[in-house]
Length: 312
Image 1 (cartoon, rainbow, N blue to C red):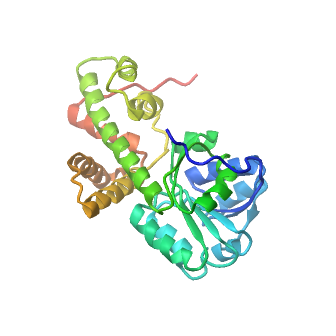
Image 2 (image 1 turned 30 degrees about the vertical axis):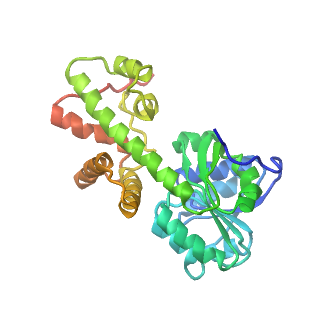
Image 3 (image 1 turned 45 degrees about the horizontal axis):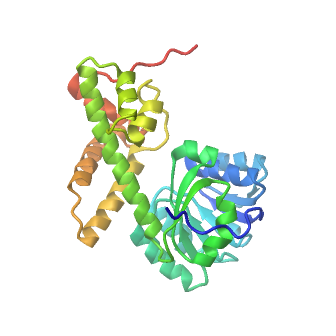
């Protein structure tokens, strides 16, 4: 199994820009600082910037100011349009000293290819580098990173990526391949999670013990990230920590389905999953973590999966 190219210098300390200090970006930026990299940061939320400044980061008052101070910029933004604005709008990152952009966001192949084609004309290489592993992986530095773009640029930034990732997959020089892999991955995860919610609520209604169900599934053919991680950590104890919003999951499915339509690949199961998630959003779940969606099945079934853990 190819894991990409070996880094040319794992110990190299770099000066980087980081834009987007949300739930994922904040952890990733902290790890870059902890590994000795110099970081110039920007976010629309001052509190997030202040948190990083307290850890040694340098604040930038605007994207343009950040772009004048660094040659390599990392992005971790929520939607394709925010990525496109940050990179292409006047006063954004596409000016100043920047020559490499690493986009950790889930931007989608089409937007990534369009932006990369524009940036390369002004001497900037865009590496699409979406990640998987959630906030826990971002905090622990164990993310999976799916990269595509200029090979020399990848070799250059790989030492910094070592601070945030564990599994690296270089998918070739064509921008957008990393994004394609990411939206496929998240769509598979979404379908498996919604299916698991159905089955687990059925089991709860039938009187099966919730934890025993998970223990069986985790060592059997029905196991998935949903049952081994998401549901085990966040749902069975009814804690529902906010790790990934339903709206962002919906965005990822829409990006994947758009690529399926563009390439003429039918995706009926993924379409059904997206329709359920769209229904959940219409019921007020948009900004809640997608683990809450099991409550829809519970309400329909008149049964609850799991029990809140008593605090000591």
